[in-house]
Structure formats: structure tokens, C-alpha cells
Image (cartoon, rainbow, N blue to C red; front, side):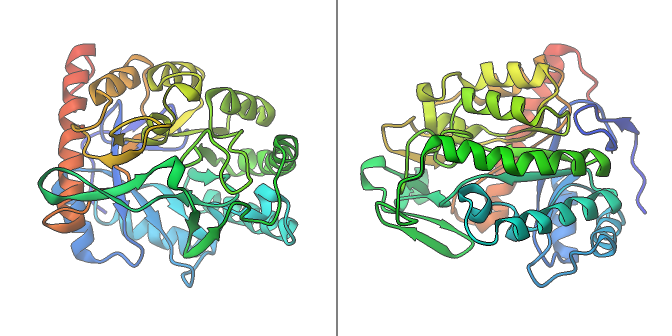
Length: 353
């Protein structure tokens, strides 16, 4: 196994150790990763990876441990390991047939992560997926996901389309969505605590507005998050803050990104950050864009993370389609994040590693 220059315990995710203190930069490791994928990440100078196991992969504790060992043999570390079949489940969000079986499957997944020495997972609680309205143009002919509220017709998740004004045949009330969340999270908490796994809940994408007859009332606003974390009442349940989603919601989120980081970060409930920018907040249409090209000054985001002493992972998200493909886009994003991090570390006197 490759050695690391230091050994620092991360306060955000107990059980994780890093080669340097402070904010950690991560990147995605493809499912069925190759030696070349590992070399690319090494060349980026990134330590942490967000790994995926394909649906037909080995989802046992032994399978997860084997992947962790392969990653560590390349001088890298797993921050998050995803089973995408369990990342976002309409059966749980909407109390559809099969809910209890899905919850049982999810609890087994959490137990297996803990047994494999993997201490973090991201969860999303959307009833009808991520909504988009096509692609938008960026500089130099690059494109990225776009969304216009008045053109919204369907959401998607794992190849499934949720279509129409009522994607599940009726309107759901906020009260029943809250009941469904409480039913789920109260079963998750004792298992996550026993397994030593921390779960960061991702915002609805896009947030705030009802889509397809389903309110985005829980993970679509600051107050929704505050209440949800209070219901969970566990140090193991917190926030995966997608900065891009928060910027999509704009003022309707009830608190801006910096305020949100300060609130949850100071309470040790900020577990992971997706570092993404967009061109404008809703109700205007938005396009996901380069970190230096949106309406948010991302240095302010990095500075807020430094202020609260956040030492978890940040990563790029929803990359642009550009010349050179995904690796070019990832290299740009990682380089930009590393430069911002270096500036913030100097500002706060943090070790440069």
C-alpha cells in the first residue's frame, strides 16, 4: 500500500484519516475503475475518491472491503461508496409498495459499509428524480444541464422518466412526505450509529418548487433541512451540501449558501460538499456552469468552509461537456478548487500540507 505523508483524523467523519489537515478535495472514481483511472486521479493530486459499485457488482461487506483495499493500494482513500439503487428511492419518499423491503435493503447496505471500514454515504430523498429542460450553451461551445421552471415536463433517475403534471397519478401533501421521511430515518439512525456510518442528505434538484405533484418541502429549503436534522436527532445524520442546488433555489431557500455552511458546519452536521456553480437562481432559468462563470463567488464558499473548520470532502459536480471530455472538465474543476483552497488556507493560517 502506498504511504501518505501525514495522518490526521477528520472531525467531520470519525474513522477517516487524511494525509493533511483541513478541507479535503475528492473526485469520482468510475464504476469498474481501471488502472488508468487511478493514475489520472493520482496526477490530479487528489487523495479522496467517491466510488460506485455497479448494480451487478459485489455489494457484500467483503466486496466493499476489496474495493477499498484496491483503492488504497493506489495511494487513494474512499470517502463515499454508492449503491445507486439505494441512493434515491421513490418507494420510501412516497410510501409506495415495497417500501419496507427497500428500507431493509438500505439498512443492510449501511451495515456492509461499516463492516468494510467505509464511514460515509450520501442519500437523496426525491420522489420523482432530477428535472432538466435540455442543455445550455457555455463559453467556447461547451454545454451543460439547463432548467427552466416554465418548461419543466419530466424528471429522471437511473434511466427512469417521471412524466407529466402528476408523475405518480396524484398530488402528495407536505404532511405525508414528512411522515414518510420520519418513518424511514427513525429506522436508519440506530443502524447508522451502530455501524459508524455518517449519512449526508443531498438537496432536491432543483429545490423549492413542487414538480409533478410532489412538494420539495423537506430537502428543498433551509428550514426543511433544519427540521429534518432535528427529527433524525443523531450525530450520524447530516447534510451533503450541493452548492449548485442551493444556488438554483436562490432566496427561496430561506438562507444563502454561506449562512447554511455556518449553521450546519458549526453544529458538525456538514458531511460533504458538492462544489458547483450556476448562471442564475430560480425562478429564472439556470445553466450549470464553470466554477468561475456563475453568479456565486466560489471563493466565498471556500472561505465559509474554512471559517467553520470543515475538514470533510469537497468535489466537483455535474461537469460541463467540453473539448477533451470529462477528464478535461474534472482537471479544470480540481485545479480551481485547489487554488481556492490554497488561498483560504493562507488566509486562515491553516497548514499547507
